[in-house]
Image (tube, rainbow, N blue to C red; front, side):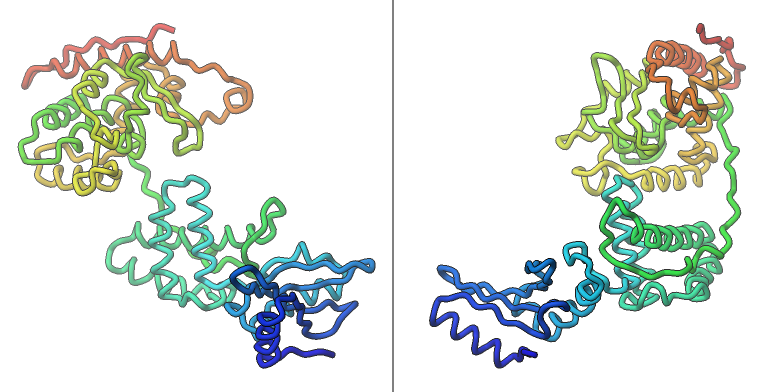
Length: 421
């Protein structure tokens, strides 16, 4: 049985460089069990050397490249051959179906999950990657993912919980649970080739209880809506103007914070008076007609050179983030100049006040891009409902104009308007 050594390889390289003829060095046994090969091929200006796994099937040799020499040394090449190919060859399976069979580490798992979120178009991928990187550093990036125990996860969560940031503790738990769930499924997904096998028998975060969800109920009454809108028109303190404009558009359209914050000029159809997103949080396209108040506001805004309606104060090449808008509202409401409200409360406010204006719940759901769960809507109905949505936005526009015409200390002069179907 021929066995390679580093000395044999060095001698062969010198020989090939001198003779200019290709050579193949063989390591280990031959037919029946396959071999590790080092292929040396002289080129015009250099020598190409790479490792291959060789298999003999039905009298024919099958080869597959497994790495370049010298970046992959002899010892590593033997390890990879034994780990990923020798067992397949012994079982008579084709080596072209082989994959990297190293057991995945914590770093492999968390990096792979973050990449999965990115390639899936999930807007949370950067936040998830940042959080998981910190967790991996704490647990040990090079530890096998399957060796992590539930108590190690709780040891990470407990200090976060005890310092009062309960929602963050729940987010961390969610990141870990989702990452492990992805890993357990990905290596058995026949539709893709998993980059790692993790060998995880159970999800270490699955049994950790979640923080009870607090369902928001806050929405602005008529007078609070007017107070906030008027303050945003003429702030009593110095603020980055795009922040106030973005919140006003939120109030007028009822859309998700992320989608308004990142509004680009390409998403505004001036001729049709529409906002159009090719994809949204629920992975579906979404188009809404605009109330005239929102159109007037957008027409006053000149998108910056990068096309953003609401650019970041720190980096104009990027739009303001939803987190920055949340922080802006948080700081402002603490001063007492606006009602106590979050950006998400504004979405709830639109839903509630639009209902007060007489717009049906079905149309409010469609305008806010809530997924309708009935079979007809999910599988069969392909009508855009644009005429109905335009009519509803006209009703909403008249309602808001009536609210904004309130006089200080006076009652509402709004007559409830009912949408005409």
